[in-house]
Image (cartoon, rainbow, N blue to C red; front, side, top):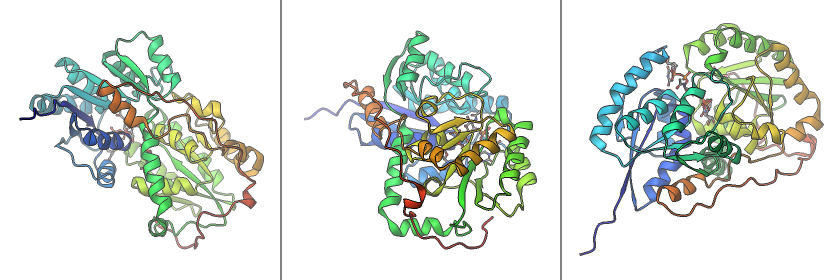
Length: 410
Ligand code: UD1
Ligand code: UDP
C-alpha cells in the first residue's frame, strides 16, 4: 500500500484587511501544494473589511475568533488576541505558524507560537523605517516578529539587507511582495471581463469623466488628531479646483471616520464612500489620476498600475518606489499636500515621469517562492525589472472606458 504523503501542517493567522489581501493568494498556493495541510485562523481584528476579501478569493476560515470591539485600545486588543489564539494552537498543533506584516494580530500570533515553541514564518519581513514610533505600533510589531521568525520572507533586496544587518537567526529569502500576486490576479480579472468592468463602474456613476480623479485613503494611528485635521484641510482646498474630483473610501476606525465626515462631509467635490471591496478598489485605482494615501499596501500597488502616489507620512518602510520616482512623501502638512497634488495635476511632464509603471515590490510570483521555501526546495529569488518607458502625453491616451457622469453615491 502506498504510504500517505507526509504533510507540513501550516496554520495562517491573520485579522485585518491588508493581511487578508496579501495572504489570500498565498493560501491558495498552500492549498494547491500536496505536501502542505493548510489551516486558516481569522482573528476578527477587522470584520466587515476582511470578510469581503475571503469571499472574493473563495477562502473559508477553519477558525474565526471575535476580538474586535468598537474603538478598541491596543492593549485590550492584544489581551483578547492572546486569550483567543492559544486554544487554536492547542487544537491545530501546527508544524509552522504563518503570519503577515506588522499588525497586532500578526505580532500576537507570532508570540503565541513562539511561547509554544512552534516555528514562525514571517511574510513581508524586514520592512523598516528605523523609527520605532513610525508607523506606530507597526514598526515594533514587525521587528518583534522578525526576531523570532525562522523563515523571513523579505519582499525586496532592501528588506533582505535590513534583516541581514540585524543578524537575525531566521533564514531569509527575497520573494517579492504577495500583494503584487493579489493585484495581478485581480487586475487581470477586471481587464479580461468587460461586463465586470461595467458592473464595477456602475457603483461609481457619480464620477465625472471630465475631471481628474484623486483617490484618497488614510488610517495611520500616528496621523490621528492634528494629522487628520491637516489632511482634511488640504482636501478642502483641493476640492475647490474644478478640474479635479476627490473620491475617498473612508476607513472604519472612528478616529478616522469622525473627523473626516465632520470636515469633509457634504462638500460637493468630495465623495466620501464606505470602504470598498478589493475588486472595486483596484478598479478605482486603475481609474485614478493621482493617489494620495498613508497606506502601506496602496503604496505598493499603485506604482505597479502606473499611478503617481503621494504618501501622507514623513518616513516610509517602502523606499523602493520613492527611488523609482512613482512615490513622493508629503507628510500631513496641508501646504505640502496641496502643492504636491497640484504639481501632478498641472505639470504633465512630472505626471508622466511619475506614472511610469514600476514593479519594485514584486512580479506576481511571491507566493510560489514562499511555498518552495516552506517545502525546502530551491528558491528562484525576486529581482527588479526595469520600469516601463515614460507614457505618452495624456491627450494621446484613450480612456479605459467611456464613462457616463451621474449623480453622487454616498
Ligand atoms: C489596523 C492595523 C494596521 C493596519 C490597518 C489596516 C494594528 C495595531 N493596526 O489598524 O497596522 O495598517 O489595520 O487597515 O494592528 N473597525 C470596524 N470594522 C472593521 C475594522 C475596524 O469597525 O472591519 C473600527 C473599530 O472601531 C476598531 C477600529 O476600527 O476598534 C480600529 O481597528 P484596529 O484593527 O484596532 O486598527 P486599524 O486602525 O484598523
Ligand atoms: N483597499 C480596499 N478597499 C478600500 C481601501 C483599500 O480593498 O476601500 C485595499 C488596498 O488595495 C490595499 C489594502 O486594502 O491592498 C490596504 O489596506 P490598508 O490601507 O487598510 O492597510 P495598510 O496597507 O496600510 O496596512
